[in-house]
Image (cartoon, rainbow, N blue to C red; front, top):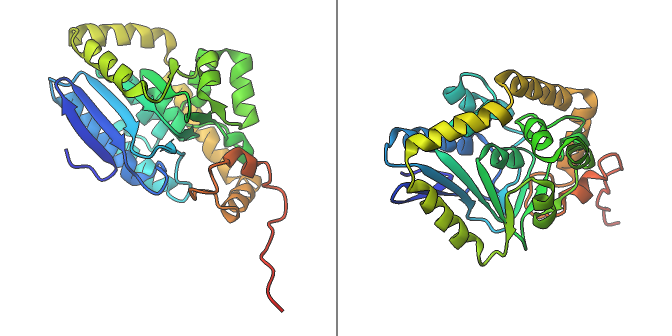
Length: 281
């Protein structure tokens, strides 16, 4: 399977997909397009039972959406789910007959976090994985499932903490809060996920579908709730304050690899004047 932003390999009934969207794995139209192609192809292949997502970039799993390409990536999502919503695309992954596992190293923020929350399981490298829902810094709410998943996983108080704070949470704290299944040493993570994926793939596919259907009936929010969050995210990002904060973030290097190493630190300065370089006399 030749895809621009995913490096895919097959091992029996397990499909491994490493995200390769330099310079920092932004979720843009190309990555959305390739995710849809992967899901459709894997579901059509009766032999594939488990999807494992990882990143070829040790510093970024999925950084967040490309805010300069919102209309384009939403149009790509509509090709699978019928509506311009990546939230519904991620929900579609949760409903898939395939079992999906996120093997996380590096930063996973905003819609990147919402993507892994749409996966059935999440395992992260203790030394490098960082999680963040930073939409509040722009005057918006998570619009692709973060509100729905995190509240159910963490409970009200912790979900409010992580979303209102717009801070990074390391893998150990994410595990304690319920954001992920487990935090593991980076050296052990690939072998653990590989063994789990193959073990699951060895069991009957019909049982996977039955179990996911019953668990989703208890835990997966409705299409209407996802749609409402998506609408509220769009509203927040297009208010004068949201537009002003986005412009301020871009001036500070938002969506550049080096500036986002400490994204929460940068977001705390959005209302401060940008330091212009001095001109030489």
